[in-house]
Amino acid sequence: MADNELLIVVYSKRSLADVRTIRDYLLYKFTQREVNKLYNLLSDFEAVVATFPTYIL
Image (cartoon, rainbow, N blue to C red; front, side, top):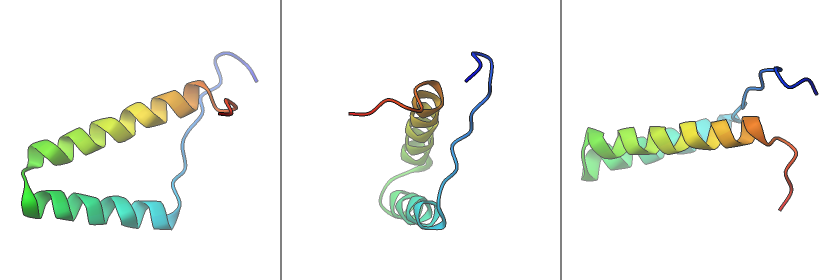
């Protein structure tokens, strides 16, 4: 893989539905601030996966 190759994270339909459910719950019980934190966590996750796509635990 080339060093400058851009990788993207593709979510399954189930994953997207789960995130929507979590978002709705956070908005119901908390505030937009917590939703923003969720989105930031997902963004950080995507950055790690894109940087280290073949890392195995």
